[in-house]
Amino acid sequence: MSTTANHGASRVAARVAAIDDAARPPEPAVKADERRRQRDEARLIRTREATARKDTASQDGQWAAGDRTPLNPVEEFKAASDPFEVRHRIETMYSKWGFWSIPPSDLRGRLKWWGLYTQRRPGIDGGRTAQLEPHQLEDEYFMLRIRSDGGQLSVRQARMIADVSRDFARNTADVSDRQNIQVHWIRIEDVPEIFRRVEEVGLFTTEAAGDTPRVILGSPVAGVAKDELIDPTPHLQAIIERGIGSPEFSNLPRKFKSAITGTRIPDIAHEVQDVAFVAVEHPQLGVGYDLWVGGGLSINPHLGVRLGAFVAPDKVAEVWAGVIGIFRDHGYRRLRTRARLKVLVKAWGGEKFRRVLEDDYLGWKLPDGPGPQVGSPGDRGDHVGVHEQRDGKFYVGVAPIAGRISGDTLAAIADLAEAVGSDRIRLTPLQKILLLDVPRERVSDVVNGLRFLELDSSPGEFHRNVMACTGIEYCKFAIVETKTTAREVVKTLDRVFPDLDTPISVHVNGCPNSCARVQVADIGFKGQLVLDDETGQQVPGFQVHLGGRLGLGDDNDFGRKLRGHKVKADGMPEYIERVTRNYLATRHADEPFAQWALRADEEALR
Image 1 (cartoon, rainbow, N blue to C red):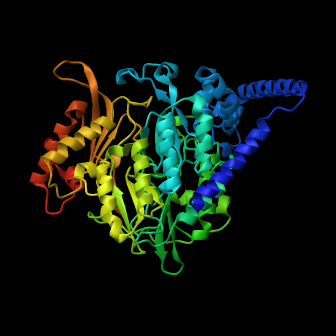
Image 2: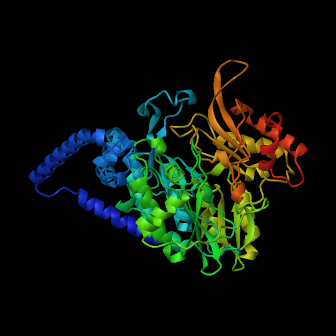
Image 3: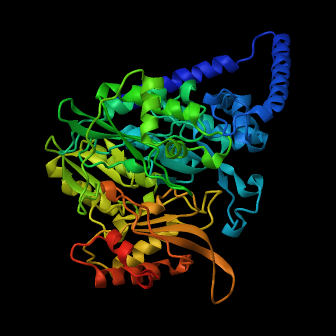
């Protein structure tokens, strides 16, 4: 079991014990009644005070402005009760009384702090997503997100998730682009046992969702990559110890995404994280991290801002706490659409943000430092294939289509890893899976064993470069199907272009929220209803983004949109084929798809 998992589990176990002690009613019953009466009176007083102060509340709901009046329903339920405390109610009430015993503020709110989302009811088409109330959209089941910070799993942990999948989740398991595994069809009655199993092997679901510091992205080849400047694992662990499960950061304006990598060329999509630490070598101070803040996608995307600040390895957790502290205190809490760090960074700019960080949160100046190395068009960063490690062993990276696997597959991967003497499985920010520490003489065994599971270490270009979010199959926000659509794209396009000599990434998202990073893909599809010219009816389809790119320094940009251009879902493979043929016919020598898409005539992109 990894050090990260051990320490994270111990911290969460302590937090659970504290919650349990705090929530346990005192012994005689009369005291319990009295405490209940006092709590009800206190809530009534807080409600009256909030109403009286409403007109004097800060316009954007910033705590730093001196007013903590809850200005929307989410802020209200967080103010009324610590979301962490719902764990006790899950274990003592809801798991015994069933789904319909859960009140709305817990069901659609506080349960997220323990990784639980209500699941979409089957059979509700995308046209009704925005028309129905939450209770009409949701089923009596949950999606559960299991944290694996840095994408790190041991064989034992992978087997546990596989067992949970098969015993409680109808054999579902999806690798997300945040290095989690998500399972579906979870009943509230089974959650206490699932928590027990997860925490027994050193994993946890704490803050896998909600207005919290989410799972921390880390390089999946941390500690083994031949071109690594520094192993970020201890610094990722320091962040977990500093802030995950802590009441200090458990009530943020919205979610907070962190990432850290030690590779020379970043492999964590650092430009679209709330905070990212990217390895660099300072000419005087040695190896450390370059600091980025304020990245994010969704409806109003914003590329992260490089602060030009150098962070020494032993200062990572402290600087992380400073950045998230600024978000907690200065973030805009009134409107959920503005409650991301990217909005604050855009308003302040990098210079002010760094000044506030240094003066108000750190109390010392960060030294200036160099920026990260910029990748070339041939640098993929997905770690698919067979690669030698710095210790002479190998890691093998494979690409499940759009991250979709199963409990059976995960169990077979764990068995294969153990059979060749490996105890390290890694998930990547691009929905890929790696097996580390493979002896040279066993590489072919691993490659063939994974291929038997339909996990190819040398897949076709579209197979390798497709990503998709959860989609309408399970997600309440989705408008269209994604995973099946992505599989059809791979099946069709890799057959049409078996010898494609350049990567073309295709990202498929079921709604405008961009969980699959559509704005930074070569071809990104954002789900929506579109008009069918033949029938005049609305059908599932996509808005198209073309030419998005990350990892290119000053040349980073979001994809281009064509006015009025939409693609029907069943016409997506045909559309990609047509655009790919146009690209191959008119590209300049060695010109990547993204550069071509930005200069091409609109007609070539329709």
